[in-house]
Amino acid sequence: MSQTTVRLTTAQAVARFMTRQMTIIDGETLPIFGGVFAIFGHGNVAGIGEALHGVRDTLPTYRAQNEQGMANAAIAYAKASFRRRFMACTSSIGPGALNMVTSAALAHVNRLPLLLLPGDVFANRRPDPVLQQAEDFGDGTVTVNDCFRPVSRYFDRITRPEQIIPALRRAMQVLTDPAECGPVTLSLCQDVQAEAYDYPESFFEETIWIPRRLRPDQDELKAAVSLLKSATKPVIIAGGGVLYAQASAALARFAETHGIPVVETQAGKSSLPHNHPLNMGSVGVTGTSAANRLAETADLVLAVGTRLQDFTTGSWALFKNESLKIVGLNIQPFDAAKHRALPLVADAKVGLEELSADLAGHQAPPAWSADAKAGKAEWLVAADKALAATNAVLPSDAQVIGAILRARPDNTTLVCAAGGLPGELHKLWRAGAPGSYHMEYGFSTMGYEIAGGLGVKLAKPDSDVVVMVGDGSYMMLNAEIASSIMLGAKLTVVLLDNAGYGCINRLQMATGGANFNNLLKDTHHVALPEIDFAAHAAAMGAVTRKVASVAELETALHELAGESRTTVVVIDTDPLITTDEGGHWWDVAVPEVSERPQVQAARDAYVKALAAQRAG
Image 1: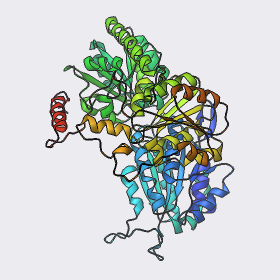
Image 2 (image 1 turned 90 degrees about the vertical axis):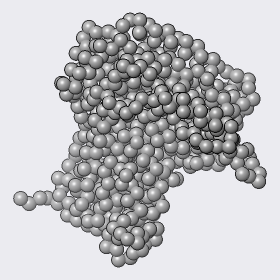
Image 3 (image 1 turned 60 degrees about the vertical axis):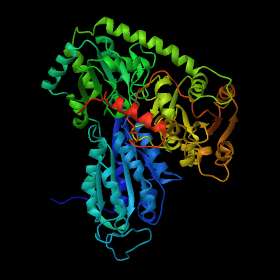
Image 4 (image 1 turned 45 degrees about the vertical axis):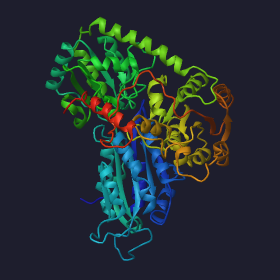
């Protein structure tokens, strides 16, 4: 049977295919690709560059300043869209491509969709070695893009034009599968990008992708119901899967119907509003006292949409009840069965609904939920104290958080990533709507914050996007401030300057180490830099302020709320103060041998703490 075909280059076929992929959100059919971030070079400017120009009216191309930054922004867009929409990123070969590997790992760890289209060397090899090509002495098929293999859910190198047909179809399956979701890398040889092929027109038919909602196996469901009914101290851990499945309402109904308190991971925070009576807040290393006191004695954990990483579990030393059972409600079997959990492989929303139906009439002991609410009331007193305004010359991170909460209480989406801020924000930020707390802590990637804020703003243009970033992370990757100006995507950036890597300095001290190479004053230096962050951000086009107190910060945030351009407010902070209440031990190995008595003491404490870890 003959097919109608259209002659296109490989790159043109990629671009046209992307314009035909759709999804339906709230009854509206939308392009599933929100756009393409591109930095052109000799590996993609002639091929993909020309192709994207041809579809620029239906598939917008955004110019970024740094390949890692643009990929981080694309990831944030997908996260803020609850994985329903996503972006692609294209780069030249060599260093441009490798700049995106960290972002690929970030997306891989966080189970977030991202299509990477790095340029590659010539498939025909005639000009080898080309500019920016790294040659392998023992394998002629290897290029630097092979670095993407371990951090991609699906990887393919396109060496012939027709290979893009199965590759793109497979890519879309991965990008839209709730269980397999993650980054896809299609490495595009630069000569192949420009080669033409007669593609079947059917390849470009509009396709609508709707995420499947997997229902639980009946035997697994029956076993989970039995465990929940026998529990006297059950706790729900809400992970990012709750948000991606848009299961917040189902979670609230389940918790209320069955009287079970909820604790939240970093990715799951905002699954319930902070003021929900059964929301105990953050759990684990950066947890509230309300959440961790329940986790310590819980006899059953219903882990919903979480991969149970060590910050959530206190390195598996948080759960101290020897009779503890875990039910892993997760769309991904790999995560559902972790640490001898009873797997309940299902979509979070459907799984909670079916669990609830089979638990009809069952409630946790009233004394358990009453005790949980009393613990929350105690925590809120401590939290209010930490967030309160201060006249200190160098305020704490918590006091800065309090100022932002008071100045921007409505329609705010908070964006952050690495360092000490995630710990304080996990405990203290008061999230309202689902997705209003946007934290990249799966990979804890310094430099994500500003680029991530840009991606969030593109996904949620009506939201007041507030980015909190430390000086160390700002120094690593700040150039997407300029991109936000270019795109009219206003961010409010609050830059906390503690003159170094304050978080890791505190960890260094806690493990007995000397203050060394973290705070600027403790580095090898001839002269300490006096960095004017406000002037730096202003040079990229931002409206900036340097404030001297928490009161001035609040005033500035009020006054700058109406600005149409990105604003950056800088405040000096104390690198040593953290919120004492809440939190839990974290397994960071301390040297067995050291001449420092502080290390020896830390080692003794470490060995004792190891005894509390759950095995297996």
